[in-house]
Image (cartoon, rainbow, N blue to C red):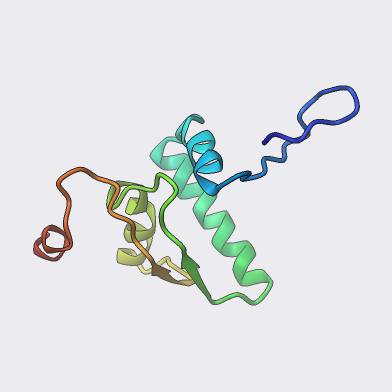
Length: 106
């Protein structure tokens, strides 16, 4: 459900009613940022988390997030020593023919 103001304009709030799949599918239809924009926005987000004292986060997974491609920026930041927050993943296998065995072998 998209909230609307008195004039019928959407102020930017989307409610996951009756379930989260509506929210996830709506967000998945939006434009995808370039890798450099993803890197920049992720680093700014991490900086803000650090500013308020957050050192660990959990990614709840699901919601049209595809592993490993949607996690490339986090992995790259970690490899470069630039990941300033510990990230725990709860991955959802949304890719056809993907299995945990495939992930472990990779």
